[in-house]
Length: 148
Image 1 (cartoon, rainbow, N blue to C red):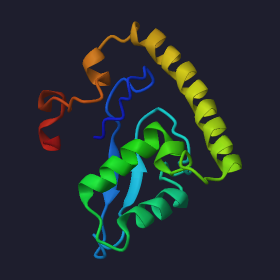
Image 2: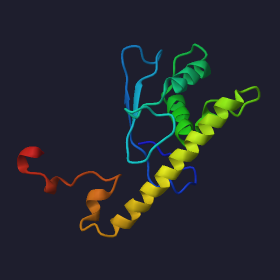
Image 3: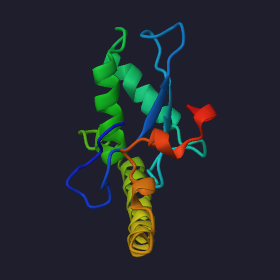
């Protein structure tokens, strides 16, 4: 789980991410999939960061092997504010690209606001709230004996 809480109500809980490492780690980045119901700017249909994220990660590593902590920090920053994480706020950055990323992030934020509004309204109707807690695991008592 990765905390993307930026003081923003749109990130009420940690986001689950799946990292898959291959034999080239730490020389190459793992595959990344971001879970959850919320949308994020600059993720593809499989909910993986677009190649621009990996390009930036590679430039930041400067040919050195990646560190897991740096990877997670970069991913967190990318999910919270992709324009800053991609260096689009730096002097000399492409203003048109910055504007496109900001517009995309704003659109995604609006979608998430509506999605969270629906989730909050329906959460009052849930009969078994423990089944909807994102950070809790399933209670072994709920599973048949063969499923343990």
